[in-house]
Amino acid sequence: MSRKKAVKGKAATSSPSAGSPTGKGNGKAVKSSPASIVQGNGVVHPSRPSISNSSEFYDIAFKVMLVGDSGVGKTCLLVRFKDGAFLAGSFISTVGIDFRNKVLNIDGVKVKLQIWDTAGQERFRSVTHAYYRDAHALLLLYDVTNKASFDNIQAWLTEIHEYAQQDVVLMLLGNKARHCGKFISPITLAVQEFGVPYMETSAKSGLNVELAFTAVAKELKHRSMKDPSEKFKLQEYVNKEMKGTGCCRS
Ligand SMILES: Nc1nc2c(ncn2[C@@H]2O[C@H](COP(=O)(O)OP(=O)(O)OP(=O)(O)O)[C@@H](O)[C@H]2O)c(=O)[nH]1
Image 1 (cartoon, helix red, strand yellow):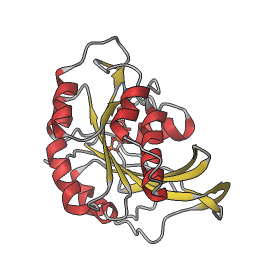
Image 2 (cartoon, rainbow, N blue to C red; image 1 turned 135 degrees about the horizontal axis):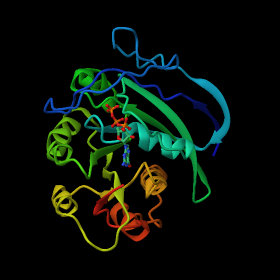
Image 3 (cartoon, helix red, strand yellow; image 1 turned 45 degrees about the horizontal axis):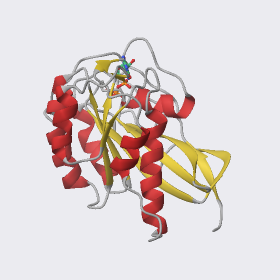
Image 4 (tube, rainbow, N blue to C red; image 1 turned 90 degrees about the horizontal axis):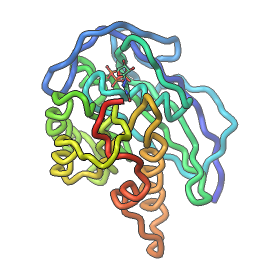
């Protein structure tokens, strides 16, 4: 297997807010960065991301997209995974889309994840639609403390079925969860009805964040290697490794 070199992008976000597939949202602050690939008018050019070289080598690479309502914690989840830090303070909504890379060692194979952080706001929906078809995996986030974000899951799933590849790896993440015993919240129970692998995370504490990306990387690696001797079941793996049941907010 020839080893390739990873490239690194910078996360960048911005704008006022309000957004979900159903148009609901919560108005917030503005943030921007010179590394953002969003142009002045909010139009994104998928073929011209801002990238810089990095010295990390990898064997296989995949694109993973973070989607979900504005404010559920997509940017924070990515920052926690990439930098091990929590973006505390006032909520600054993402404008358009941006990405960060991380190379994971999955059973001796270097798997590069190029993780796209999308804006949850309705007004960027047409921009993010263009990226769905290239995504190998989608992490659909909701906020365990915000029922509206859970209620919007079905609308997000409809979008995903419309724009993403049929065989895309899909996982639901209930973010802002907290490890607090065996109690299982009504939302957690209801999420199981979607028949999509799910787990609960906290970008704030770091709970299960590494696991969410590792599980997806394992699934993608397993599919691409097509090794019949190696059986991998995403939900079973997550259930075995997951800490906490996420009944509380973090
Ligand atoms: N308590 C708690 N707060 C969180 C967590 N993750 C994110 N937040 C907070 O939730 C707010 C929104 O987080 P973001 O990561 O900006 O949300 P987003 O989904 O990227 O929002 P858009 O960019 O508008 O799509 C911020 O104030 C974060 O500090 C978490 O795990 N626990």
